[in-house]
Length: 135
Image (cartoon, rainbow, N blue to C red; front, side):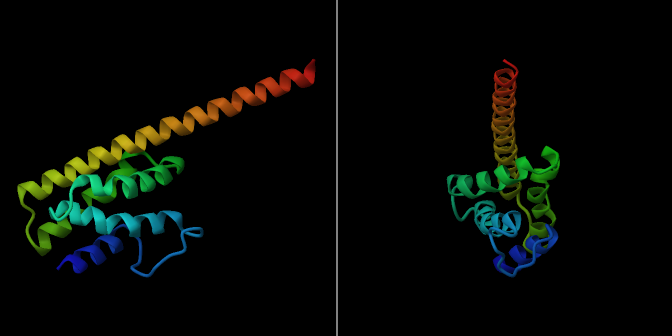
């Protein structure tokens, strides 16, 4: 049942179950790494702490893409109907999905802020460089 849900989830988020190259398809690779652990969290098999690293990696990639916060975390909400149809979605599982979505949203925003700080520093560095060239 677990593998059937995972395969359906991967297909639903547009990632085939075949392995992918982390350099050619970093999002697909990150999704394939994160989804099994996320599903284990939702099913209550592992604690949320186990998913922090793979989820942060995925959100870091999504943060530098041109997607909204809603688009970045939508894959988590896609799990609800899959679990509901295949094994029944109880309140605890639904709560874990919601908590994972909030965690992903926080991580996404943190990564976006870091990216903006890096961009700002680069703009400041370029401005200083241009001032030196003019002087």
